Length: 118
Image (cartoon, rainbow, N blue to C red; front, side, top):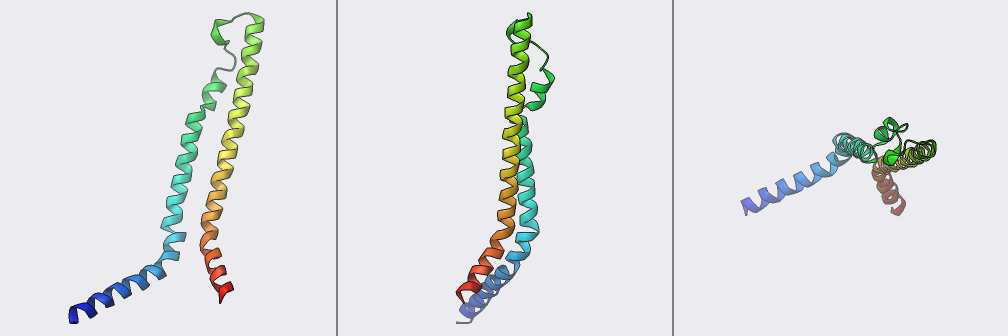
C-alpha cells in the first residue's frame, strides 16, 4: 500500500509539474525549436528553387542558341523563372510566418476557450 501511495504521489506531482511547465516550454524552448525549423525550411526551399543560379545565368543563352532571337528568348524565359521562383519563395516565407503566429496563438486560444466555457 505504501508503494502505491508513493507512486501515485509521484505521478500526480509530475503531471501537475508538466502542466505548469508547458506554457513556459511553449514560449521558450518550443518557440526556439519552431524558429529553427522555420529557418531551416526556408533555407531548404531557397536552395531547392536555386534563384541565385538563375540570376547568375540570366545573360547566357539556352541550348547553345547564340543568335539574337535565342538570347532574347533565353533572357525572358529565365526572367520569368526568376520572378516565379521568387514569388514562390515569398509565399512560402509568408506561410511559415503564419505558422509561427498560429504557434504563438494556440495557448492563448486554449485559455480563451476554457474561460469561455466556465
